[in-house]
Image (cartoon, rainbow, N blue to C red):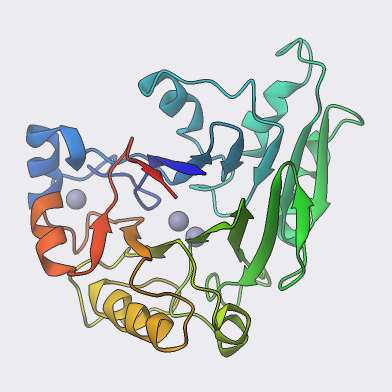
Length: 268
Ligand SMILES: [Zn+2]
Ligand SMILES: [Zn+2]
Ligand SMILES: [Zn+2]
């Protein structure tokens, strides 16, 4: 497998749409890896994870298209990850495609996409945590995210397996639940991508995202239970302008991790 990170920011993007803070000014001037669009990824060019407001612009930015994509895994219904109206462009007259686009996610995602669904063209399947599904050529298991607490939504994150390789796309979630750890134990996952929204900030009380301190602790925990081993690639991803430093500086502060950037492609 390979994964392409199309967008690596939290909801406001980096630089943030309306912000002129020190980091946003730096990012605008520096360009390159410091420009981060809203969150999403693509596996092998065919399996899309999340489809937010920048998904179309990202396809143009990186010279790809979504025509070969038949399956879209949505992690949760937050607007930076999920634009149901954009997915509905698969329906005529916006597209002349014949193959249905199949969207998967939690119950809230199902409610939000319901008005757009069209038999044989745009379908939705609700997924349950810790059940394994055959989706395209992949085995996909949703896990239980710690995110959007008290919203009534039960967000998911995904373990994706193919050809003996595995990828854990942990967005958006805080430190995993005990049920997640029980499921992941001894799986020796090939690549693990973690939420780093809080960046270098360590005094955040909000539950639902992580920063570098929790990423480092979670890496240790996953190694200790055999969910990961010395061959596992760890990625920090999904950054906010708050608590963000330059890409190079973030890599220094996260030993054992690669720091994502828009367009980063990794063989899994
Ligand atoms: Zn997010
Ligand atoms: Zn800012
Ligand atoms: Zn979110």
